[in-house]
Image (cartoon, rainbow, N blue to C red; front, side, top):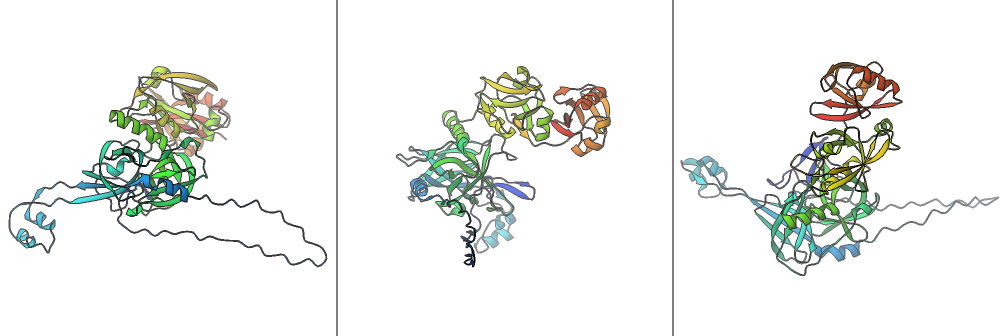
Length: 492
């Protein structure tokens, strides 16, 4: 997470819908914590009946007590660390005015350099950022966020017993925002890692970290959602919680009620720069895989198959004959890529990878990325109303290449019944005008209709015929610019 006055190069924020995504780093302001007061409700006692007893109300179920987190905090606080990253801005030569601007006005040399010609080296500015981390090996191996230590000239790790160590960054991975730091120590306490796949929405969770520099602060909340896809989270199915997470919490652990770490607190969505009830954690199994590769190889290898995918909505599920919305719909295939060579094509719905079910499209990229490049992966594919298995030899991910989940946009449709005027051209049917169902779906002039319900169309007549046979919903594969996506059209 990141405050508005974040130090240079250690975190970044992207404006989204009036708020911004941020990584927690720097204590620059005070935070006021509001704790909801406990409320109790008393039922008014019924007056004694004059003639007959009032009917007795059914007793409410026994009230479930809140979990006691004191044991978890006590057992794990020694394994949670505070991380300070120091960035020294490079000193540069400037003119006398620039030099004077970099000096204190009370400095006796201030007026000299302001009024006389000459150049002096500017004093380097030291900027610090703060985050959290936790020990995963007794030999001093620590997990944290990449944005906590990225670009730092020096990393200092402070333990709960106030001992401090110089940290060495063994490696960091931008795609997952994971970094591995090593300190020269032995016999350190460690946390226990859990299984995020068993995490349920509504479960209690505990976050420990250093918000605004307040070390070993504990906050609690519940899991709000799982497998959450964020704008920059192609490889990470985030755990969303409402546990209070603020600048300085980044890299700290998220515990379940069994005292197991299930995630690394990483981001918040906020319009103020502080906690607003929505925070995100990287599942610990994703972090553990990244850590293993960083320690062993110094880098992270990821698999890729060369497809673009989108979410399967109810309308698209009906169009492709699925019993319910699930899987990842292939909207385009990279020519000559691993998926293309294996026979995958637009309109295929990927339901599982090596036996692991894909419920939402955001779950596919991390599953593909986890496959070792060069090995085969078996994909369960829904095509033409039936399941089939397709074996794909997975390639190695290069920057900007991945099975990427893209949010559904909208595009054009057929003629007549669909409200489209089309022109046949090489590569598909060019939309000249959109109205009716097509316009409501978001089709625009210039869009190119490539396929209907996964089957390519080469003429307006083929499209009309497909529309005539369709019942309720039709899925068009539309190309707009360099992007392709399936668009459901409600024919009714």
